[in-house]
Image 1 (cartoon, rainbow over the protein chains, first blue to last red):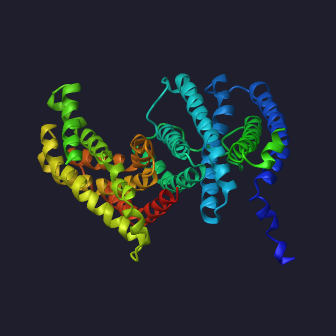
Image 2 (cartoon, rainbow over the protein chains, first blue to last red; image 1 turned 180 degrees about the vertical axis):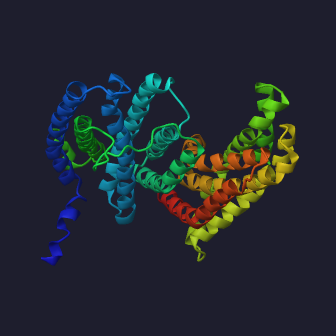
Image 3 (tube, helix red, strand yellow; image 1 turned 90 degrees about the vertical axis):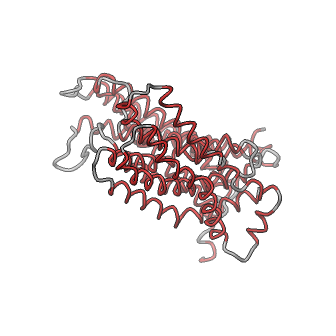
Length: 247
Length: 200
């Protein structure tokens, strides 16, 4: 019994197994994402009242906050996958990191764009050198550096490992970058309290927001599963199972 | 001496590109000197391990009985002496050209010294990661500059505070803390990066 305890983990080292599992999960993730995003958008755009200060303008929060949250969570995924890949020399983990990085960059870009569009009516300007905007921009540069480095190697295995070292250096640096930028300047609102008796957001706005965050997370999972499949096919293009899979 | 030349040239461009008014130069001096020092550190950084990689010395260093992080740390120190130290010595001179107050010069030099050492450590990680690549020099800025932001912020902050006659100790302590963190962690990251590059 003890001998097989980690068998489930070792199976994730096999590309065909991961390819199959990712293919099985992706549609379910996509359905969950689609349904909760439709519900969240309905709740956010129709069912909840306008904000007492910002009117209808605040509704961009339903895209902005989930993408900002995912932009950071995705770096966590990249860094964790990179660490697993470096420590246990697991090729699949590197594949996940490489597949997740462009998604993270996209969510970061989306957070910057929606934040900029939100800033125009509320702050009167598209861009301010505020702490969170700046650290989000630097996060985008970190993603682009990771993508550029891991693509620069002809041999994908060296690119993976070089990118992984960079991702881990970045994860040590992220808190330092964040707090240095916070001390440098701040215009963005502080964190809003979401839960408890002294919550600062109304339930009719909170529920759609949480639904959107949930939906975005599953959207990320669905895209990641599909991207991992594609990346695996490309890397294993000379193997028999890949030929079988695309037949 | 290329980084020092680059540092002087870049700093000279700002008064030419903006305007030579002393009030303007005084306000932008800390930032300009710092950005120029940051970019000067990047020049030639990617060649840190290049020749050793090409003639096989790097492999011998990895195989030697000395721990690789220690070798990496000495390599960074020697690199700083030929690139960071000249920039540090030239910083007060460029400060003078930018109408930076002379009584604040000590803080400027100290911030540049602490900061460029940290930048050398960061740059060495990126240099070790890109040593096997032909387009390594193109990749260096995008790898190093995002990570260098905290050093730039606190370095320029220390110099600006000193120029306004305020206490620069806080920013200098933070720079020193980042240097300590860099000295303890970066040699291991450099060693790991060298191993990755040699395996390719």
